[in-house]
Image 1 (cartoon, rainbow, N blue to C red):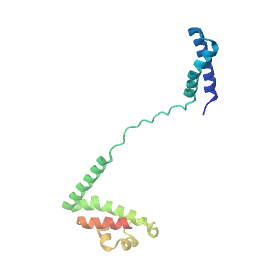
Image 2 (image 1 turned 120 degrees about the vertical axis):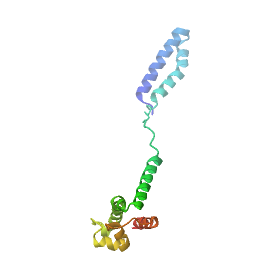
Image 3 (image 1 turned 90 degrees about the horizontal axis):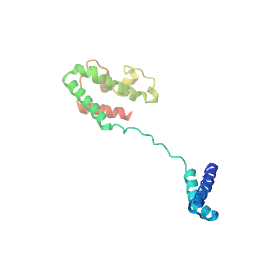
Image 4 (image 1 turned 60 degrees about the vertical axis):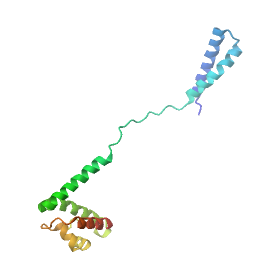
Length: 157
């Protein structure tokens, strides 16, 4: 889109260039205006161009592999500690698994108002084995296959 301001400035450039060519080179005014015409057209196009866009400089994002690796290694270390020390299972792993189970159960419309896994509806939805594993204070760290089966079941719900 050609702006009126660009046209006015191009006409001013045309007049100034034609006058300069006429005085410096000594050409007739008609020829000076004709020679200055392409330069005035270029000036009009430059002035009619949209303003440049300022780039939004931001630092590159952190690679996600580092944080994921740290989280996975921390989890693996906690699970390894829980295998050797059952009290760590009850203090570190069991509450996190219980929170995951509660969140998965709350996604079901009938169980959206659950506040605790001690609710009989939670016990019925999880099954006796999983409910005991997640709520019993004397529960011990299960085998990795059992934990994987529990997590897969929670994903399905």
